[in-house]
Image (cartoon, rainbow, N blue to C red; front, side, top):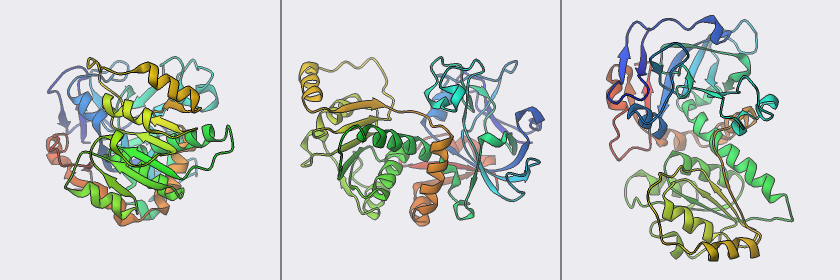
Length: 348
């Protein structure tokens, strides 16, 4: 069968294998026919050789962690042939740590977890794959065109879950949310904010293209320019760029008892002249919270599936700016600068 692979740590090793072996039964009882995989910045970094880890005993890693497939067989009876399904990316470490032992593998403490298409497990960019029942998420049939968005949505579902848990520390009646960055994570974070009834503001540097229209279609307000110049005091900030200057401005922007969730990963080596003492004073005196969030556990995947099924399906479809046939895989992994979400289509 076909599979898109890389040799982790080796640049320019991306290739399409036509005779990749069928998934072994040890991978899971549920056999799935691939429909599509979404491509994100993590995939680009793995292709560039920045990181990635092949399964034990293998030199190649099958890419793909944003999956969508259709069940071929499930002897467990949980799902049925023809059902839409997505595979959960992270598996708990085998030790396990205290969090992995209770299903909170997104909060793994020892780093020994594995991840499909990233770290130690083959990904979903292959014609067929298997998944264990506890890592299979069934989807509403209405999500057939966009179900590969479940993985990034699970990330922001976790972010909002933790925001709400932190907010419950006191009487909290938040009204305004600011999302920095209008990539897939930022737009999906804005979607979940609107579903919660927030007045939503989204900031991005793009002045043209689909991003402003997508934000406005949510009933949210689109901004460009510096965070510091925004005429609003958000109760919640979800930072999705990872740009160091934006991160610092976002931390300063939240109002009293505000919560800032950092989801973007910054690159190092870019020092900034910044008054850390003033930030500390503001965070302490206003009882603000800043926290980081990454990955998701089963609870968040289920929350994400519900959120996507509630959403305007045409809006979700508009997030996907390119659908590339598997035979043209190299184009799918080549950024154009104009993309929001690129999907590798296994049905074409």
